[in-house]
Length: 108
DNA sequence: GGATTGACGTCTG
DNA sequence: GCAGACGCCAATC
Image 1 (cartoon, chains in turn blue, yellow, brown):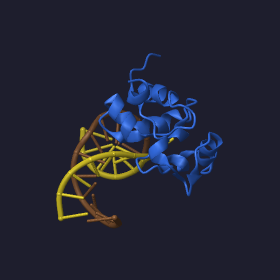
Image 2 (image 1 turned 45 degrees about the vertical axis):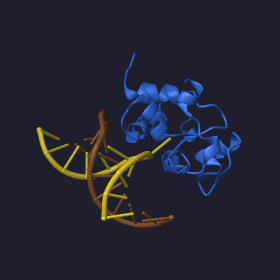
Image 3 (image 1 turned 30 degrees about the vertical axis):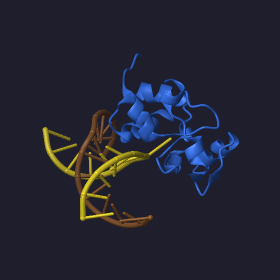
Image 4 (image 1 turned 180 degrees about the vertical axis):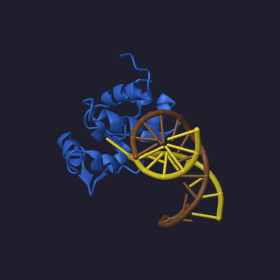
């Protein structure tokens, strides 16, 4: 179904996050003009279990894996990031400032 | 139909 | 610099 919901936008944009990179809810929300980062988190919460979305690449502004608790296992999110080459310590992305990915930076 | 919650962010104190 | 409160918009209870 052609759902113009934020659901589809967040879902598609999250898929475009390159491997080894991470993004934030606020940046995605800002690019999608959602007006609220919570919309991104809400959409991902419905998406991650229904669609194969790399939600593990989306973290909060602090670079913390705030959504790890919603994964099947709280360590799965960190494992996936480390598997992609992202250094995660104490559930926080290291060098987050250098790994953060902006949709407007790639898609422009 | 109203109140609360939610994977957040920004401002003010 | 850190802590607390407010705002967003939609879904769920």
